[in-house]
Amino acid sequence: MIKNITEKIKYIGVDDTDIDLFESQYVVPDGVSYNSYLILDEKVAIMDTVDRRKCDEWLANLETALEGRTPDYLVVQHLEPDHAGSIAKVMGRYPNMQIVASDKAVKMLPQFYFDIELEGKTIGVKEGGTLSLGGRTLHFAMAPMVHWPEVMVTYDSTDKVLFSADGFGKFGALCNGGEWDSEARRYYINICGKYGAPVQALLKKAAALDIAIICPLHGPVLTENLGHYIGLYDTWSKYEPEEEGIFVAYASIHGNTREVAEKFADILRAKGARKVVVSDLARVDMSEAVEDAFRYSQLVVAAASYDSDVFPPMHDFLHHLAIKGFCKRRIGIIENGSWAPSAGRAMRNIIDRFKDVSVVEDVVTIMSRLKPSDIPALEQLADAMLATKCERCS
Image: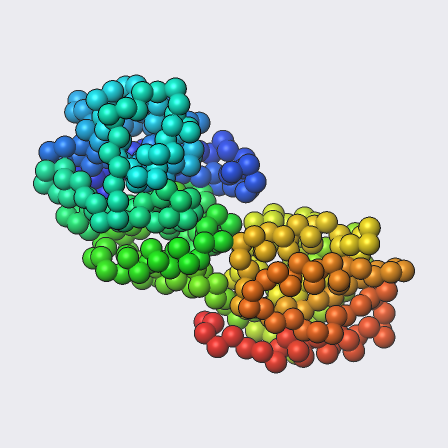
């Protein structure tokens, strides 16, 4: 796909609708886009390449968009293979082109491209570095750990365009369209979620720029209502809840814990909960469950005991939350067991690794199946969850 972003900047990226799992773990039913851009000034700069899966299609776009010109520079903002996977082929086609990247990326390049000649073909840049293309100047800002250490972003001060690397990216091929917030949230939380502080640092740099267009490496080019997207990134990277709500995540072996979770959700609704979302961790895509945990202001986990521990889908879920830096939430715990309940202890052992969370101390214990005598404990847990409101949620 070739599209004019401005008079001198073209989109030359490609859609991947054949991919089943992004990064071999995230379901992408609507595919994904690999974005690349071409700046045609007195000198010509390619802004990133694409995954090698779609290299031939991308090279065809590039050749068409060049209209006979030869690129002078390849700006590499991020070395992850879904963006840098076509460097060797494009360098083979245009051997006199210079690679412009952060100093860290230049040092890392031989790890991926030990089989091509890089001597004399790289230009390392630092924070505040610039590159003149003749009629315009590119300004580089380092963005370490958003979400690799070598990442940088690029600002074109002439057209007021921010090339944002993985920032503001979204799952979904461009040909499939789709609402931005949901798949951008799932992308951010699961790809960049651990790195809130670096994202905050990048947002502070972006705030000093006059930005009219954001060109990410995945998802649509953003040209309107930029405050909405930047505001969501600010919320997500501060680990603050986006909405007032209670996310009930359960892991049930034979359906008994599911019955408890669904009954608890009914109790919450009857008591006036603003929003209650229930998820079966054994069946839902894990990235969606992680997304919802970050989206809502409170979390309740309900799980069966298993091998003197907790049923693995719940362990997997809590492990994902831990490595993504889950924090600033109130958590309730429901366990189920038939002779020696262990799920509550096992869940608490992981939850205790979370920073800045409060746990409702009275764990609700169910023995095998939900009984009328269990209802008061569920009511008490519901009251405790509803006693806390999210002051900043919309």
